[in-house]
Image (cartoon, rainbow, N blue to C red):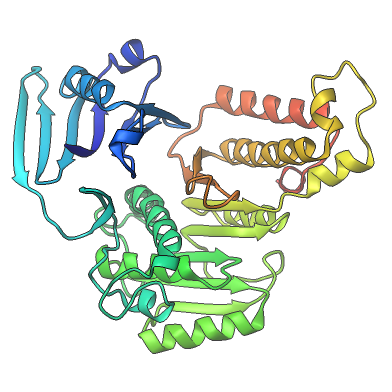
Length: 400
């Protein structure tokens, strides 16, 4: 049984065959009883700027795999319960398949015999997870903390995806080693605004230092002094010398060193905008942002509802809960457009499954090496049109 498959290195025929120029496809076996599920596989289809979701039955997935592995995608890595199967195609169209015994480390049981690979493994104690009560001293994930464990690993996947790009961007900027431009003298600088209890901050530090083996300095910022004190004590206890915490306001804090990566997780309302503004103005190579509590546009619509019944938004703005959701989506769409205009390649992705939390959108932005003026102009037109039609202002749009 195939547990997962990753399709990469698409050929020039990908867009013609599948309808879009996908850069990567990731497919995972779903949890639960296969007998009770019609759709047994969940797939993420990535383009350069978007991600699309689809569900497959087992038969449809296996048909997709047989059609496109080695033909439309030159590299496909499958994992079964026992093997890792790599399908490769060379430039002459010759397809080769290589099989290896599968390593057991890093697997989580999903029910029945199915397992899922995570960056942080169950059964292997991770000090910060033990201290934060997510794991026992033996490495077993605490049942009530499994959603948090899943969230942490999902976020680390996003971090893992941007690390190669950040290395290239920093190396090009500083004319240093593209394989690893970071050192003790010049570590990878990360600013984490609105870090809160810092589950993910500790996870990123552990992942980058212990797994990626990079020299890293992370600064976590939050308004709550008691929370920051606890985080600082835990960082000292764990010996995380490159992890620092400060009390401060995102809009006013002076970071000192320009960050390579800016992380902003659930920074409330316009705090996200100030963090994104800081990232852009300080030339961050990459941004990971999970917005929260997007009240700004909704409050404007509530105070000054559009009067034109012929507006395409008229029905959407009539009902409070719908208006609130539309305002939140519009806010994040505007943020994404602005980052595009500032020279970033932007994706808006699902952070974790909807059933776990409503705060499930993540904006991932990576600085481009070049710009396309036509695309930037189109992005600006879309954003300005949306703001005009809704008759609202937005903080990031005003700041940048």
